[in-house]
Amino acid sequence: MDVLAEQKSESDIAGVMTALGTRAGDAAGVLANVSPDVKTQALKAMAAAIRARQGDILKANEKDMAAARKKDRPEAFLDRLKLTEERIESMAAGLEAIAGLDDPVGDIIASWERPNGLVIERVRTPLGVIGIIYESRPNVTADAGGLCLKSGNAVILRGGSESQHSAHAIHACLAEGLNAAKLPEAAIQLVPTTDRAAVGEMLKGLNGNIDVIVPRGGRSLVERVQKDARVPVFAHLEGICHVYVHEAADLKMAAEIAVNAKMRRTGICGAAETLLVDAACADTHLKPLVAALLDADCEVRGDSETQAADPRVTPAIEDDWGAEYLDAVISVKVVNGVDAAIAHIARFGSAHTDAIITGDQHAADAFLGKVNSAIVLHNASTQFADGGEFGMGAEIGIATGKMHARGPVGVEQLTSFKYVVRGHGQTRPD
Image (cartoon, rainbow, N blue to C red; front, side, top):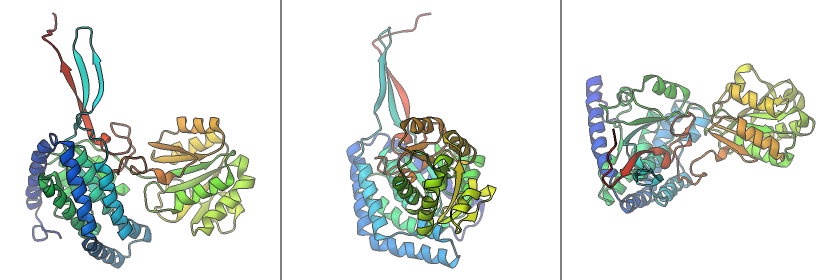
């Protein structure tokens, strides 16, 4: 799949990447003025192609899986990489859901009239060209391609070497959809090499053609992008997510949410990594909560009180409180009240997603107001940290920064705006 395998010089890769950027810039100019109906046609055709080529996608994915197993990749990594019939159908359904969303381009966000008669409108516009750098999740190819198209943006996708066969098979379906709607194939391009020099070229901006970079992967990838990018970045660093069981929590609800938040899918960024239990309910809640996790085949690393609750608990060390396990492992700690829980999250969290389980609305409001994460939940699993679950159709990622986009990055977050000013001959006086 690496079409530049014979070309190892940086100048070769720079030339190819520059050409990708130029084509993407041209395509972005077309997409900015495409009607919603044409974009919908393309998205539905992409979904149909994914269903029709399911066998090809599964075969390509098995090549990636075999290579990953040969490298002894951990189970959590394999889970992120693996495609099944159900996951492929989810990709197709996601594209159809994106197609059904309101088109954001041209939406009037606000409008007002000045005393001089000028009417000012704030109108949504595409960002332009989006560069997305991701690692082992092949579904990002479809999600990102569809979201960028819906929001009128061209996109350059650079998947990880571990998922290259899967990504190419999915990208072929996206290209088929673009062709069906008579849109330029350069609207959604896949970087044709796994050489890391291609990432460096993207971070430079491809001669001004890339308007924003979205990294989706581990800490090393995101930190490199944040350090080296010469264009704006929608950052998603880590998903160190917490579930806090308050003293007024219903035990059955708390256990079900804790197990789901950790174990539904351990390798996603919305998986809970730390369970905090209020000291005021530790006598009644701690032991059964820990047992529920252990019985679900989750390793529990706990503080001294958690270790005393169940002999199967292993001691937690300081590094555990800030760990993103992405595996069937969770750290558990007893905290003295809601303020202590909030302080722990502020110190060790990643501003991604945190939840409180309680029947006390006052405590819930305090938690939701004071925890400064992109997503905060009351009596719900952290695994709902997902654009699809938010009704966005899909997402490119969860942005944990505070500028422009925050939380699930969907079609609206992939737009900017401009001011349209309407007058009838006004001039500004001296």
